[in-house]
Structure formats: structure tokens, C-alpha cells
Amino acid sequence: MSKPGAAASSHHLIPARKQADYKTELFFIGQIVGGSDFPTDLDGLFVEASLKYGADNWQLFGGKDQVSGLQTHTAYCDDEGFFVWAHPFDFHFTCESVQGWPKLNLKVWRLDQYGKLDNIAYGVINLPNETGSFELECPTWRPMSGWREESYSYYLGGPPKLVNSDPIVRDLNQRRFLTSMSSGTVHIHCEVLMKAFRDVYISGDK
Amino acid sequence: MHFQQRVDDKETEQDRLDKLRIAGNHLNFNESDEKNSGFHVMVSGHIESGQINEYDGICAKFDFISGTEWSIIEGNRTGVSQHAYKSQQTNRRVVWNYPFEIAFKSMNVNGWPQIVLTLTNRDFLGRDQVCGYGTVHVPTQPGTHTRYINLFKPISSSLISQVLGWFNGKNAEYVSPTELLARNEGREITRVQSGGVAKVQFHVTMKNMDQFGIFPFKA
Image (cartoon, rainbow over all chains, first blue to last red; front, top):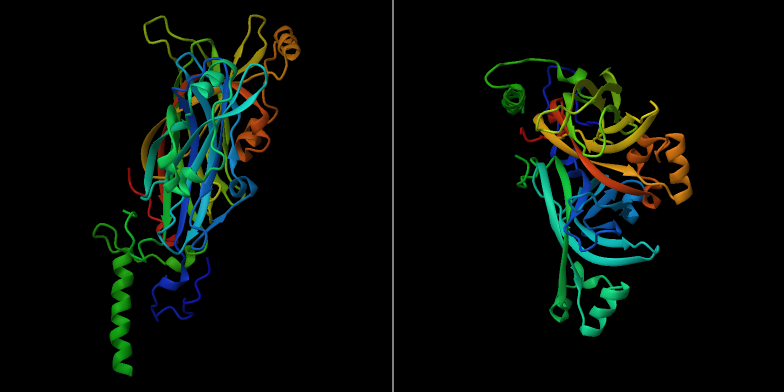
């Protein structure tokens, strides 16, 4: 955190921070806590999450975990139907534009008793845009098809899935052709810290 | 030129004093000393209680894990509580009331500290076995916070190891829970059983974060 404007002599008072010294940075520190209300009792569920943000103005720092997406362990539910994932994340962004604020794309996978893996729900949630501590709840859904696919998925597993994940957030126009079945909720706890947002007069930093 | 400089000098002096003024006090501390030494996060609190249905006589061990740029100035990174039994009254909770106090120093927000709880209890032969893990980040806003940590227990990868574990008094446990939960590496192939909630209360104080341009919202 070098400050090239600092003067050598102490009586020449120059402000400690200049506007150009700092880039606005955002820290999202939190956890994918767990999930509830999913339509499985005996099967294990895990979440695969990836970050989506404006590619040109935003830059994500971090290890391979954060760049390629994170995946939680497989959890079996407790008596009340709550699946605990407790997967901490720590995202560090530098941003030059407010457009393209990060979102988390979630995919919920199911591991059934025969060892089969299946993608059963999708969700997308915007990360908060003000400093503070937030409990986010991301409702999830899966695409639905005719009676044939639905009975197939009821008896054998393997619900209908999206061919590509564009309709989730990238190309929302495709959603008008979808029918979906609602699924459970993913609970995320996220705390946000902003750096140098006050200098550029963007709201959110209280 | 000289006149202009003097006017500018007065403004910056006033700006500097405005920035340093805290609730009407005029504190002239020498900020150039502390500028490059990082910000401090002081955490105190206690592991209050837990709501765990299947087990009794549970001992809670906590660990603070933080990124590589964080250093601990004061306090204990780990601690082990007493073995606590549930009361005979109606609220079937396990009370630990185990305080912790730790102070961190860092130059970078990455690697914000987390607390990892490992719960163990003794089986009928007196052998320690793990009955839950949980983790939560230390709150990033100063003030008092209560966090409810959802707990989970690893499941053995095969039936044989589960049966042998029952004989040996060792349930499936993580070799290094702090590493696993800090780095999340290799975690996606494990399976866990959810169950239980632990309540932890945090009191967080911060110092010098303003000079880094970060203004955490006071809770």
C-alpha cells in the first residue's frame, strides 16, 4: 500500500490518500451455509457455484478455487431437512465499473443411494452491493418437460436439465421458452467490505 | 505563487485535522508511523451453547484460521472447552460458555479469520470421538454479533470402515479439519451428515481500517 504522494518533510502537509492511488476493491467474505426444502430425503446434495461478473471491468484475485468455481461436500440432511454445506468463500474483486456486479451461479447436484450423480436445480443470486452482513436465500428451480420426462425422473431419477447454462443469467431472453419446477432454497451468508468506494462517490459504503 | 501555496497549506492542514477528528476530539497522532503497519482486528466472545440432539457430554475445541498475511498479535489461536452435558430441564442445549479473545494484524483483507469448531464426546468406553464440525467467519463489521453455526459430521467412505470405526471407537473424522476447511481443497469428495447448531457470540473491534479506505459499517 505505497503512497507515492507522501512528503519527506513533515511540515508540508499533503493528504495521505489521493484518489488515483486506490482502485476500488470489493471483498465478499462468507459461506454457502446450507440448503433446505429440497425434494430428497435420503440422498446427498452438493452445490457447485461459479461467479459471473462483467469481464472487462472486473478482475477477480484468488486461487484456483475461486477462478474455476467452487464445489461443496456432499451433505445428507438432518431431521428438519436442512443440508449443511458450510463452504467458506473469500472473493476479492477490483472493479472499474458498477456494471457487471458479481453474481453466483448455483447448480445443485444430487448423489443418490446407488452412487448416481445428477444435476437437479439451478439458481442465481446477486451478491450484495452495500457494506454489511447479509443472509441471502437463493431459491432454485429446474426445467420441466412433458409427462414422459416427469415420470421418468420420478421413478428413475434424472430430471430434465438445461443444455447450456445461458438461460440462467447470460441470455435471459431464452427463459420465455422454459417451464420450470420450483425446488429448494440455498442459504448463503455473505459479508461485504468495500475499499475506496467513498472516494469515487458510489453508494453502498455507509 | 507563495501566497497561493500558503492558502493551500491551510486547507490541507484543516483537511488533515478533519480526517483525524473523532467525535469532537482533536487527536494529533502521527499517522505516518502507523500507515504501513496494517490494520488490526480484535475479536472477543464466547462459544455459548449448542443444540445437538444425538450426543451428550460434548467438548468444543475452537481454532482460528486466517490467511498467510494475517498474524496474531495477542491471544490464543486454539482452545478446548469442558465436556458439557445437557440439563435436565426443558431446554435441551449444551452450554459451554467458553470465552476467547484474539487480536489479528494484517495488510490485506484476503484470508479473513474464521473460527473452526470441532466437537468431540466420549463413548461408553471413554474414548474420544468426533461428533461434529462447524465453521464461520469472524464478522467483518465491528460490534456485537451472534452467529449460529450449522454442524456436520463426516461419513465414512465405506460400510466396512464404518463398522470398524464403531469397534475402535473412532468415527470418521478429518485428519486436519482446520486445513480442510480453510483451503476447501479436496473437500468435494467428502460426504457429511448434517445435524446440530452451535451458537457463538462475537465482539469485534477494528483499528486503522479507515486508512486503507475500508469503512466497515457499525452493526
